[in-house]
Amino acid sequence: MAKALLGYVGGSDPRLLAEMRRLQQRVQDLESELGRIQAENDALAAAASHDALLESIDVPQAEPALT
Image (tube, rainbow, N blue to C red; front, side):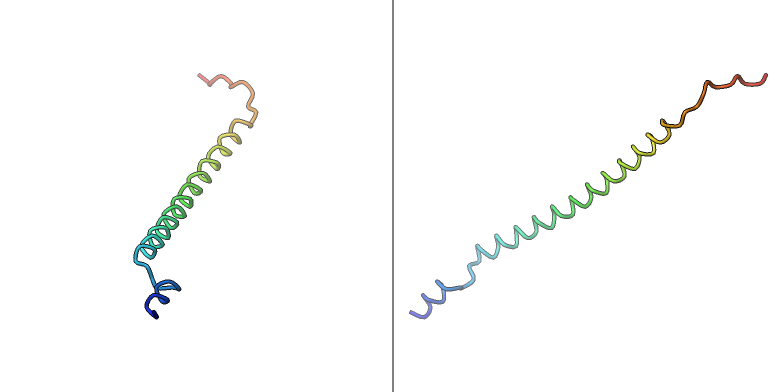
C-alpha cells in the first residue's frame, strides 16, 4: 500500500521528467533566439536611423567641379 501511495503522491515519473527537460531546453532555445533577433533588430534600427540622418541633411545643388 505504501508503494501505491508513494507513486500516487509524488513518485517521479520518467516521462514527466523527460517532458520537463524537453520544455526547459525549448525555453532556453527560444530565449537565445529572442536575444539574437533583438540584437539584429537593434542593428537594423541603428542603420536605418543613420540613413535617415544622412537623408535629412539638406544639401543645395552640387557645385560644378573646377576644370
